Length: 116
Image (cartoon, rainbow, N blue to C red; front, side, top):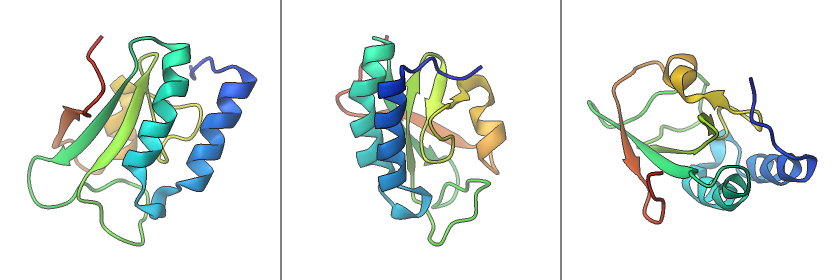
């Protein structure tokens, strides 16, 4: 089940994701821009930074033009939203298995986000 965005919210999040695609290297600025929209939907929304627990890079299943040292995603309504998931998001419980080649990711709360 996808996030229950309003049409306006989905359009705003979609615009942010289009402007900050997978190969843009702008996952953190995009997540921080999506976060206020996510808070409209879920007051407990937070931005997470994902860091490798081993090695230097996080490795998504999506093919990249350059390597990522970390990634950022917005958790809203028990879903993660980022360039990997698109506007509908992916349930947090499925996010790592669906979008990452390795499950060795350290989840760090982004500055300015609060744990619900």
